[in-house]
Length: 277
Image (cartoon, rainbow, N blue to C red; front, top):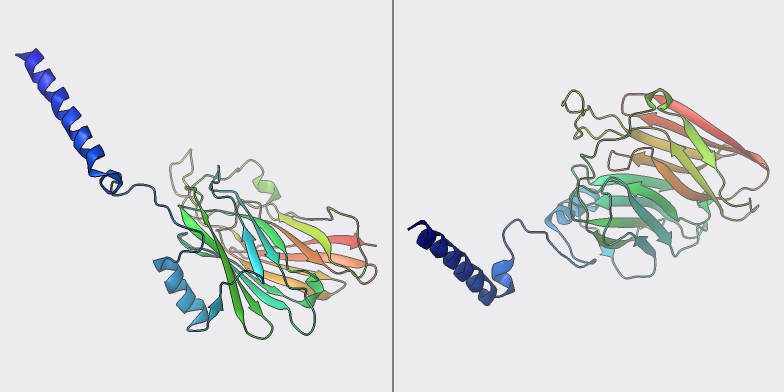
């Protein structure tokens, strides 16, 4: 009797599997399965965000003004490398005055807003983001003439906002380091990098010891200047990875001091400086 019952169960499983395959791909896509999209698709989150940030202003998605580079699949959702490439030189006649870096499906979708001047020379930026689930990552560039341009990439990863940060050096929170990865080029865009040692806690991470949520605590702003001239101001949120890093350009017009002023969500303030000659 038991052997007959087991045989019947196996037969039922076989029939169910056969019917599922025969039904075609639509039937195999179970609810809750991993989504897929093209890089240029919209999303309900993006449509809501677009209205909130830009109202009814037209946004040009034609390639040629700004580009975002990101991996299609990221191995670690808490540290996804992002590069923004500007196709427009920063001249007084026309320049990118603001960049919005957005992650559609993050709890905090506005990862960064960069307020730029012509002192960046070339509006290229690199950073690392948290991506909480399969999502589009977008950049919107606002030009000095008011026009908006955008580009987007669909990134397949998850868990970026709940991954526990490295908490081994909390005594160094706020330490701000400026570096020059390439030789200085006077009167030309020169690459530079600013890193703030900070856990950038999202409020969605569990303390592995207490099993309690770690309160949100993240870098809120980084203001960079050279020789007392504003290069850019960055308003950030916890969608930026721990130890927030920004690679950017600035135009040195003689010897001076590159300075980064940092503020976090608990009113912590720090300054990093680097002499340039």
